[in-house]
Amino acid sequence: MKYQKLRGTEDIISPQIELWQEIESISRDLFEVSGYKEIKTPIVEFLQLFQRSIGKNTDIVEKEIFQFQDRSERKIALRPEATASIVRAYLECGLYQNPGLTKLYYIGPMFRAERPQKGRKRQFYQVGIEAIGSLNPEIDAEVIWLVKKLLDNLGVDDFRIEINSLGCDDDKIKIVDYLKGEISKNLDHFCQNCQNRFERNVLRVLDCKNPDCKSCLKNLKIDIKTVICKNCMQHYNEVKSLLTVLGVQYEENKYLVRGLDYYTRTVFEVLNYNLGAQNVICAGGRYDNLVEEMGGKPTGAVGFALGMERIAMLLEDRSKKKIELDIFLILQDRMFLKEALKELINLRENGIYAEMDYQSRSLKSQMRLANEKKARYVLILGQKEWEKGEFCLKDMKTGSQINIKKEKLLEVINRII
Image (cartoon, rainbow, N blue to C red; front, side, top):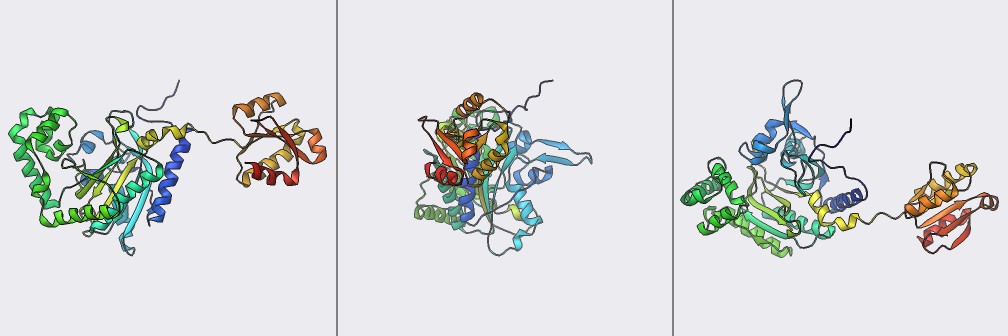
């Protein structure tokens, strides 16, 4: 039987994996210096966690969540996103008892049963942060600044940050009534999907990608901020003011709502049109009621998630640059194996990328293998070198070679690499 990976999943191998490691490393460095600590939550959770936090009428819960019953007939789900799991851990592990703001970051796989497309798999990976414990606009601004800084550090170009405000829970009730009143005037002109969403989750109509629906919304001149309360508008204006202070350029998008029920007040997305239709590379916002809804005290919170596949697509030229092999060690006879292994380990312990043949090939075959691996230098140990306590170092680009005493080998290699 020939085994194949499941549709919508990917094997991430070299040289692409080196790019993924770079994305993770750059993310960790920025998050750590900004006071965020890593958290790893389980991949499986109780289904009810996501139904309650994300919302039963969202696309994720209705159509995209991977769910099953375990042997005890409990309803289990593969996590479709990280925020609900992190809030659950925040409460269950007592992180709310820590002094000050709880700042967490995560890197890992998520799962959604949607139709696989370029940059959107059924198993996909996210890098994200959650800042839990403040209602103040400065943490909104910091989180959005971190998005910009991370993309800058990664070398991502041509991205645009869009922001909006959904107001508080009372505002969202008013927004729903407002949208139904406006959209009902022209409902027949919207797509069937939007007509279905009209009763169940009218906010999602604003997020429709159908050009006709976008045109209908534009003609209706819908702007949800017209029904947002004074306090929420003040909060939103302060966020914008602070973003300007931090040098973050943004655009306001009055149709931006995000697809999860827990969002309140500030929401944002980062787009890059080099990816085509799937152009959202990062998204996030506030969720000031989620901690309380899950059994905690009223607690402000804000975060974002960045899609690693889409970032890797934007930086794919980097993945084509393989890490260059510094040294390939060649033996003329296996009688020198112990000495060669000792030197191989010595090179690696000193940060030098070194390899050798493990299949007892001939000298000619070892040289061919070193060339195929694109080794910068080969280090040859034969009878003559052994007798003199030397190694022969050959430059694979120029063909020149020199003999080096064993005790000087590391010094010389460090100087030329």
